Amino acid sequence: MGLKDAMKTIDLRSDTVTLPSQEMREAIYHAELGDDVFCDDPTVNRFERIAAERVGKEAALLVVSGTMGNLASILTHCGRGAEVILGDRCHTFIYEAGGISALGGIHPRTVPNQPDGTLRLEDIEAAIRPDNVHFPRTRLVCLENTHNRCDGAPLTAEYTAQVVDLAHRRNLAVHLDGARIFNAAVALGVDVKELTRGVDSLSFCLSKGLAAPVGSVICGSQSFIAEARRTRKMLGGGMRQAGIIAAAGIVALDQMVGRIRDDHDNAARLATGIARIDGLSIDLARVQTNIVYFDVMTKGLDAENLVRQLGARGVKVLSTGPARLRAVTHYGISADDIDQTLSTLADVMRSDRQPVPPQS
Ligand SMILES: *Cc1c(COP(=O)(O)O)cnc(C)c1O
Image (cartoon, rainbow, N blue to C red):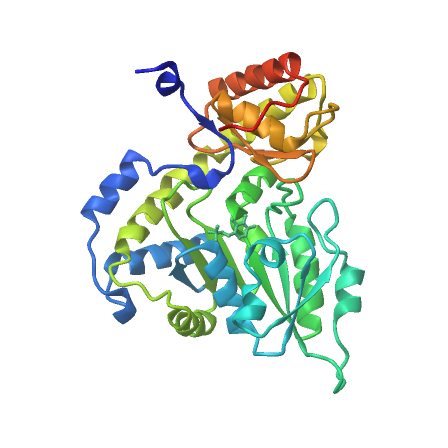
């Protein structure tokens, strides 16, 4: 075995890289199964009851991914030609392949995301279309919690309630992209139900901080979920013995929420260490959950180059801009891994201010 094989890779690119726990693998193995398109999979049915109850909604629907969760939700709320108000840095607008437009004929109306992930209430209000034959009809407001591109910022219950009030007063629905909603609940020290109260639908991911191999969930009223089930089928997301996925989801909800605090502690540890390394810059106050963005400020060294050098030393991070990098902590990352990452970062920043040639 060469040195390279012996070296453990520390993968901080995303919390989606987490592998299922032993308990999840066993639950998958033993799962009682049926055909979920006939609503006959007992494990899916049990999972959906647990998920709905957990976030304080009447019903839930297992979907393939967070992208499908948002797409099926937004398609269920909006007809073709309707308009959705959403943040200009939100995942649905940036990273979901334009699906709401391509597949749903839905018009996205972006308003600026503030650095804390919120949309200003005045901006939402101003974006709502008057009733006029020239305009599309506004139907929906989308929020994202925690906010991925805004440093993983958690949106508070108070803020969410204000948006829900405004939207409902104006006859609009609210969809919450809660891919990392449990990270928000842990960071804010509140029950997750506080953060979902009043929203008409939400989606959350099983395959990120909760470490399940596949899957997301849509939650909402009985009638909304019944419609969303039809939308999911239309999108090709009707799954048969999906209890294989739901079994891991049950373990995720049962065992993984309680350890998210460790991920946040590790993110804070990483951020504090980065702040001490010459040539790197980070705003410590912005690191509140498991996502750490930082910048490289050294001449001749850009983010891509730093990613390559770290990768060669067994530490994987993402570049998200010319000088910007992202590291995400998760179930597969220990405090020791963070210390190893920091010493590797310090080495690279010390030793190599010259651009390295691209890997062959
Ligand atoms: C990851 C993510 C999604 C989509 O999840 P996939 O399962 O990768 O499709 C949606 N919203 C946010 C905020 C995310 O971070």
